[in-house]
Image 1: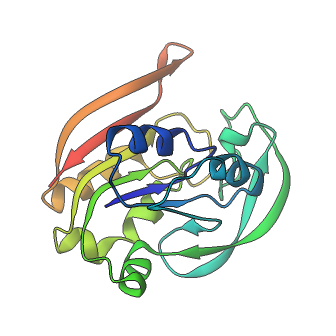
Image 2: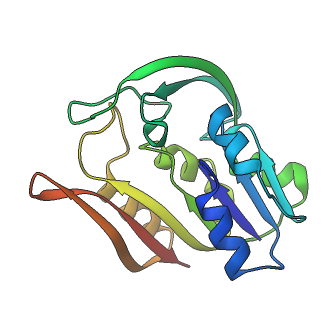
Length: 189
């Protein structure tokens, strides 16, 4: 059972379906243009949804940036190189409520790449995390101020470690102006 939160144009979906061809995948992407690209060639067992994941079930304004890989619920920060060109209202679900509704008791892999909104996504999975029902977490950590009110990456790691997850690895480090900009972290329970 894999959750691909922030599926964008389907990059991770392709990887997951190659590595785990018989897996069940629930993917979420609120940007209509990216969702359309991610939808191409979706195989049976992949459930792709045009809504977002967050801390609670709600509706929020989603910002479409000039660079689609920057689109986020958050406004641009002082180090952003992209700008908001439009907005639309999207449905937001929490991982916990989605799992309860769909009878999902465990998630083997939860990937979250939501452009600074990953803390809200993971807080929306609090029940599953506290019950140790998520095996592996892959999350993007942003160190540059790309977005206003983005999750502090060190606080997010501290919170997850406090829930008895341990850090396996950091990878795909991206640097800008001689400093760490963002990277992916993998944690396991």
